[in-house]
Image 1 (tube, helix red, strand yellow):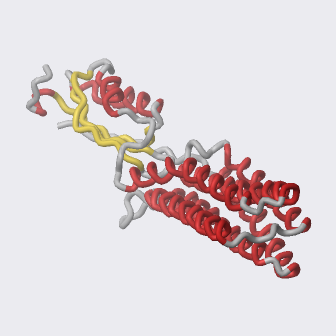
Image 2 (tube, one colour):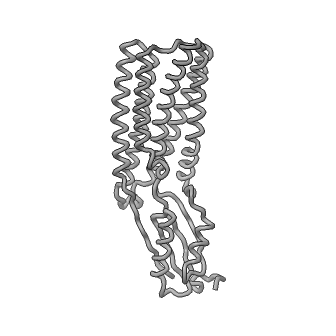
Amino acid sequence: MGSSGHSHIVPAAVTVSRALIIGIIMNVGYALVELLVGLWLGSMGLVADAGHNFSDVAGLLLALLAVKLVQRPANSRYTFGYRKASVLISLLNALILLGAVAGIVVESIRKFNDPEPVAGTLVALTAAVGVAVNFISARLLMRDKEHDLNVRGAYLHMMLDALVSVGVIVSGVVISVTGWAVVDPIVGLCVAAVIVFSSWSLLRSSLKLSIDGVPDGVNVDSLAAEMAKIEGVTDVHHIHIWALSTTETAIMAHIVVDDLSRSDEVRRAERALLAEHGISHATLEIETCRSNMCDCC
């Protein structure tokens, strides 16, 4: 029987952590200002939106927690470390996003039945500041959102708030010109639809990774075919691919070779191939047709 090989690659998280921290500071500051302005003007809409912004800060904090947990070392109780927690946090963030959307839908439906006057100029200016804060925060996360589900969740949180603020401004302008109060809930429902469409893939991917499904972008059959083309390899089987975290993918596979003396060479070649596919942790069992009792010779 052959031996096993392991490769560990921990992605750099400094840039992501910095972006999340900056976003947290900016959004906490804005939410506090919004709360104070709302209390000063007696605007319950602004006070409620400040509460919503604080909930989004919680989403950013969860994403930052996930980044930190991934970096914690493994131990005798958690031999993979705390990487999987990042998947669970991404699932929680996706559910928080959908919960926020549900709140927007309920509020919009209520406004259809009980239209409210649009807030004044100062409130609109406060919302405009919110647009800037959230777009800047989202921009900081944009580069890494395709590589980490938690960053994507944080990005969507910021875009949700930005779109809500834009909706407030657009509604205010349209209603001040036309007097059509119904525009406000219509814009709210449109924003909710955009967020559902954008966040659905986050929820789907998070659910899949939480039950050890194959991460998006990895095709098991084509990868097995490429692995079998490595010189000296006659078969690849018993392949299992799953996510260690929202940024790391692992594989376990049996590699059948024609000569066990070439095991190390084959393992190095296979690891290099897997790295090209973004698979950072590989456990490869090297065996021969004879030891495996197979029909591949």
